[in-house]
Image (cartoon, rainbow, N blue to C red; front, side, top):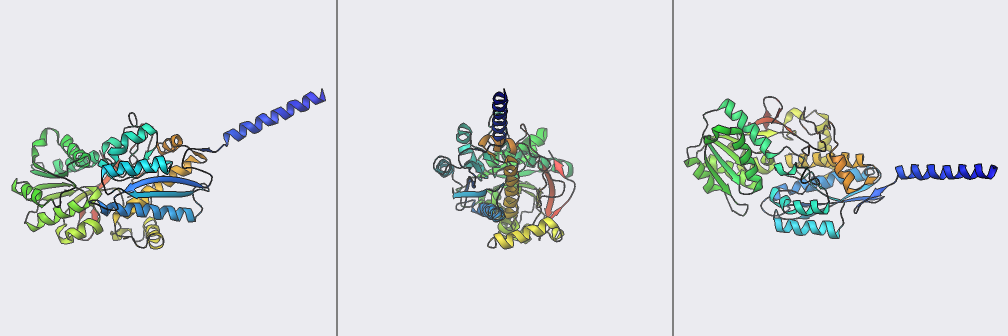
Length: 401
């Protein structure tokens, strides 16, 4: 009898150990281990959108800092960031290499609407997270059809809605000219503008598109001026946005001008265009402008400057693209912390879809990150701002669609 009791006790102990061990088990998919979390990315380090390349460098620098502090849950983050030149065929090639050869856990922050479109179906078919894509196209928030793809910044249609709402209130008789990139990126902005204008869509008197392979957009700007437009929407990437601002000024056209958020960098857009030629531009912002002196004593801003000085000294601390990369990297670190020891692709997406009131140090006050299994857009708010020749000056309240 004593032997039976001893055996029963032993079996109970074994069962308990197995149960508790299973609950604390480490679960890994390709790219994850006890020591490392390997992630992949493509960035336009060359080509027509190369001004955005600094985003990838800022993110890599942030992960270097986290690794020096011990990593996330004891694991180092290894970012493999490859150049795709903002060319979709090259993006496909590089992402296949990252997934099939490098065996990364997921793809993080690859930049560009046309480039991400080229890998959208592939990554979802492979069930590899396409996480926090560096584009605000509306398609990145479709968990029903593409559960492995998630955006980060507010979507382009929402941004355009906000501009249109402001214009209808302040200048209802405007004659609008639109410059847009002829792909999903530019067309998403244009759709948002038209949808919000609704039965007032005839306010748009001319649209002019450009290709990313075009050398300039000067002829398009001239045609928009000739249309009689007194309001100018620039839905363009940095190189072409700078050209458009400069050309409009140089030909004596001074319309009310809206500049899309992804091209608001003072360092890489407005300075090349000419600060004096950029006065009066209106945009929508969700992050602190590093050139704005109002943040000088702000702790989040001071931490940002310290990070740039120590970990990315070759980067420009005045370039808002670097602040953007810093914020997305912080968001990813939060997701990885929540993953704990369950570093499967499925759990990465589960945790990314479970962010609650996350406040980032370089986000504007009142801007919080929230996601859910049915909400794949972490940031959904904006604040309008006007450029005064030196910095973006906020006005009005925090806005959403």
